[in-house]
Image (tube, rainbow, N blue to C red; front, top):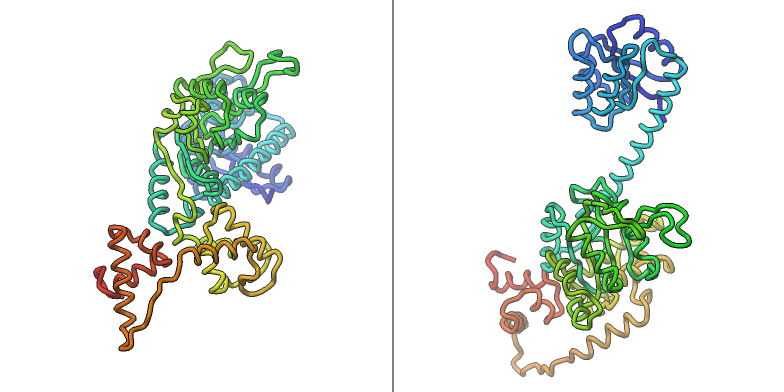
Length: 462
């Protein structure tokens, strides 16, 4: 790491001088303080990597300084300096949060080794902190792209759920609607963000392994159990377990999962001791769980236990106002990844996007954009860059909608009056639900609102 900074807080002038001379030769920046209050001020101003802190100071106790430093920065590394034989005090400082302690008179070489190990801990903590910060940015609310009315409602619910104490959440929606992203947002926007997030695909794990992976096993529980292994539930204690495709979990495992949810306890395979955990369980499925319950493939009691906070993610075709917004977002994303400068998509490409039903949802849209940007080098994504099924499906949708038989009267007509009447009819037909009316007219919701203002259906001016 870069030139590390060490703060020495000790009332012995000779000891401060000796430490400064010896540690400076090792390449460290050393700052010193004679009293406890001075040490607290220097810590706040300088934010050292390591603090060497004497227990006995002339103004306040070193233990009080330790508590003050930990209050300001709970991850700070503090090595206590104690009088010979003062083990009881040293143990007390460790309980408060000191990294380690040395006894006077100490061996300088041993102290240097201790400082070197402590700096490795500092470096590791910085890496972990940076990694957590990256995850928080990667899976924050800003990464849920959408401005449609449907997604605004979903985002509002996600915000409430993530900040709540809810321990079971059920995500439902078609494949590709972003359930895995939402699960991560719920975790990284919650108070559990610094604890583990375990992503488990119930389809990917074989039935013979899923219980041992979730709950762990004791040594000798079965032939290959050479030693005890903690399960993912135990490793995720304090954090979040994401059970993707939970409808594919076998019934016997569902029963054990229900016990974990209700009692917050479980036993390892082959174990007799109850293990207590504090978990938030986010379950996801693209199946109709109620139908699975009726077919006796999913436990009814588990279904209702998971369904305390259900969250439905709409299909992309149900949030058409977001299609072009998402497409532009993916273009920006792949511009960064592929070092390209694609400016957007052609008007006809946008029309094809809007008419296509997107059975694969957001995942399919992202794949279409990625494919076009890998294979083509135009400034804009053109219709010919799109897969054939997307274009043919879009044409079929437009043709199936039919073209009304409109004849222009001999005396002509006012096209704005025709547009006004069509908008009024669409609104009346869906009881003034703007999203559905926009869909009837193949408009975005923003385009519909503009026309509603233009013709006086909304307060305000266009």
